[in-house]
Length: 217
Length: 217
DNA sequence: TTTTATTTGTACGATAGCGTTCATTTTGTT
DNA sequence: AACAAAATGAACGCTATCGTACAAATAAAA
Image (cartoon, rainbow over all chains, first blue to last red; front, side, top):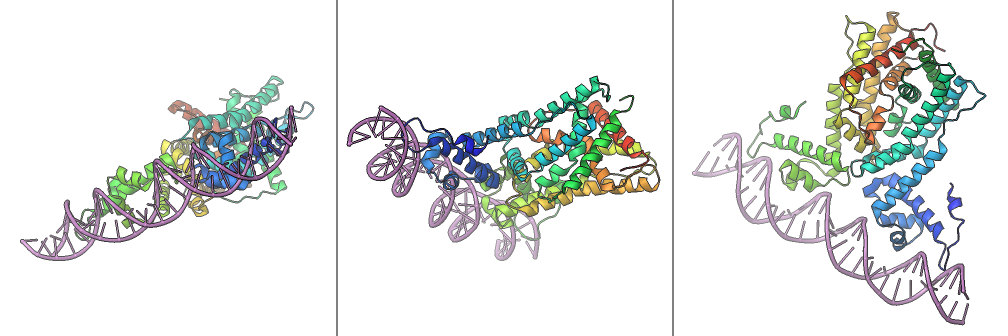
């Protein structure tokens, strides 16, 4: 759902279009929270960025916590829609995994995602529910999709695994290595498309090798 | 360096032992920062926890930023000393790697480390230098140690790799998978020693398999 | 045009934290 | 005992932010 999609609804009764403002506020809030973290971000700065009065924010959102929660929810919904491990029937497992690896990298290495993860972890102590929300919409979903994919391949006899969940996690681990950690702490990577391909291939080759063995102790 | 080590020095001239207070302040600050994050932690709460007056803190540390920096530095120094990949001459590479994997898990899964990483990433935007400091003392050092170890094994002909750094990162990725991420967002794992062993073995087996092949494309 | 919901700007109260000042007290040294 | 460094507590100025109140303005609907 793009910002534009939200703006289409017209207010039911007088006054300026309110749906649009909500979207503006959420966008502004996201930017402020991403840049300053929860407690340093201020409602007034958000209002200014959204070109909206502070009162309007309080008329739409209960308080700062609520606003932050909404931002995270929105982001999670966005995340859920944009990362899908596809099972392309006609492709080989190798090709599917290669594609998944590239998708994973592109998705997790976006500047947006890095900034999101930076601030979100810090709020887990204050509000553990927010950590669960993120896990359910991001990492767990990703791993589950991957697991499903792998189970199909196992049924087909293409690969072996005695612990599919562990195998899925291994795949993610092989692909990302410590990259997400480095990025989170400000290390610049700027992988070219070719380098990403190379990394994906290395991970897929390694993973396939492990899972084409006869036994997994 | 333990807290006790710091307290051994006696003040050069009159007044209560000041070195001990510095250690107390740092310990208290660490706890407060870990629990509340940088901006929500307050100097007064730190003072109270350290059983020290606020003025004492300001007489020893320039300001809040400085105090936070000192806490991070202390933590980094601690980190540097406590995680070492040892190259035990008489052991097999498999055993060394198994040991390294267990060490890595124990080290990175400590509650302390999880809390540290939660709040640190959030401050990277505000102060990128702090991210670099952490990377240099933690992840980069770990990977470098691992890389050195692997290079020795390559010379001995025990394994093959055309990109040792990538191989070291793969190892870390295989061992940790997405565990550190899950922990950071509040997912409880509580791996038993046996489960850790199992995970370590799986990672080492997989990694060895990949690196005992003839060629690495 | 009138009505009605919504938005706005400004002002406000309340709270809270940073960093400082200063007179006083504590504590180790000489 | 006298001294000097260090620590204390309480108060202060300052700034910032949250969340609210209210009267005026705006824009869509009737």
